[in-house]
Image (cartoon, rainbow, N blue to C red; front, side, top):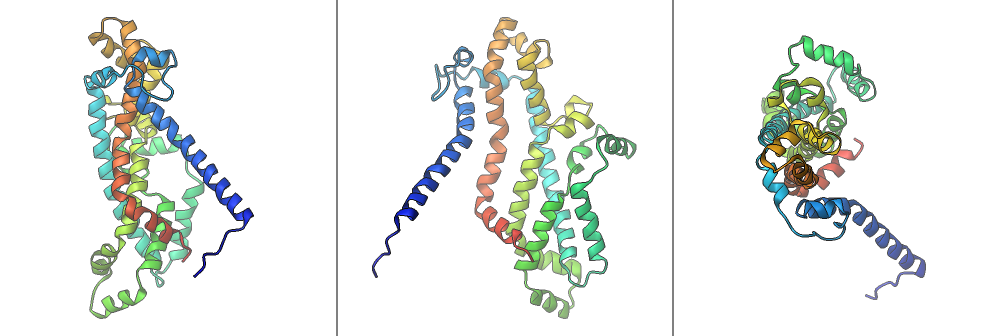
Length: 302
């Protein structure tokens, strides 16, 4: 069968489209590449603006010094714990709610759905939320970092649509005829058939929780409980505008002088960014094969 030739206008469009998206990809990837090469470059070369396309005078001094910063690794372990705990709870609660809202015979579904959607557009504000967290005893505890923002209404709607479109109603009827309860059907049928959407939710919730610095900034007073992103924000701010912060002083203790500490801080902030993004990249790499399928199915209108 003879291959149909593309018209000139189609060829021009495909060439332009390819060049355009390659340009967009480079714009997105270059800042990530710059951070990576700056993290292994000489601090003086970074200050002089010589690190643009490749590492200059390769040095691991930044990584060596952040390994000595104990609070960074404490906060790193905290973030791993908060993220894992929060993702497990968030997925379970989201799927439970999505299953209930997907049932056609669920009385009051419209009212409950309205209350869920209402919270997407309106909230009580920071001060009322802070007062509530304090009054129920969650202020300055690990629970506030695990449970705050535990359920995303958008993710709930995606999960509900997935269950409605991907799990046939005939399976529910068969399970009911065999005497299964809703809890048995949910645990033995819905969850095993929802691996794709679980992977999508794990990525969404995991990235959001890992990148959350604001909750720790507002609700945590004990520095031993701080998540990584809050500490990272302090380090980046301190290295740029303040030479008297805890991070700079800790570096000065092991460096020859404050000037040397400032020099090291120029490269250490890039090293910290590389280390901090590692878990998110690994999470997406493992979930990638499920991610696109789950997003597409969950985004279809049921």
